[in-house]
Image 1 (cartoon, rainbow, N blue to C red):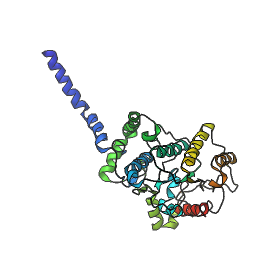
Image 2: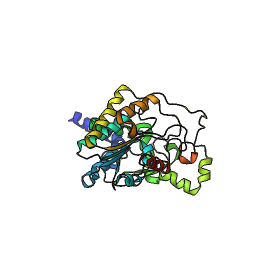
Image 3: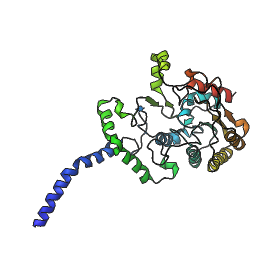
Image 4: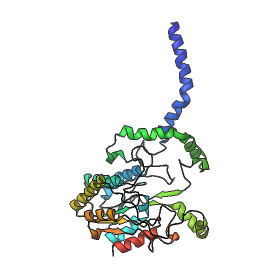
Length: 334
């Protein structure tokens, strides 16, 4: 009896001592800070790096696909976000294209999404694929980064291991402190950088466009002051060429994409976007892509040109504006 009493006392103390941690663990599942524990019909406005764009793009697709039966898709990184589906619609005759992008999207992600769409039974009538400097030459962690991890729905990753990545991130670098601070006081603070950024973003329903609303608002308030800030590094007067970056295993992804496009007789366009660094896409990479997809379907807007020269064509060094995307579409669909 004495041993039992001592054990109960120990257990009681243990529960009291561990209760804060237990509550913190429970809060993760209650608040679902990364919006991955449960599925959502829609995703709210947020501060960048709150959510995984792969998860959003996949779930919004699943939420609406039965009703919309999507047949037209935009693929790429956040650089592709400015190719608004409403602008693209007029070129392809489809009122509900779908934007299936991801943050720092890589070629394996694009290929896997196209394969997944095909497996869902969708016809792929139109595809707009936007490549950038990181599509093939990437350093992002697509297995362990909460921003870049590919969605378990189509990546083949074990769902438990996928969820574990986010669960651990909640406790890393005191993320939970920053989360509850922002949740309660609804303010961005400098110490939150890396967990959140003070950049207002919008997600559109059904079409899943990703809009840099914060940049748009700042430009409306003071466009001259916006570009007076130190947002841009000085580019070389001499046009530079990127190193060859397409690896043999990545050619397999390109061939898989092409095979599915051929299966659906897809009207597809492959675009090397007008990135701020003004580096020309490597001729070897361009040649590989043209050989696979056909020269008439591949467009190169890299390097020094009328789209990349003006600073006013960019939100910052990573993203060009919708006006640039519209000019690209005018060119490739004329």
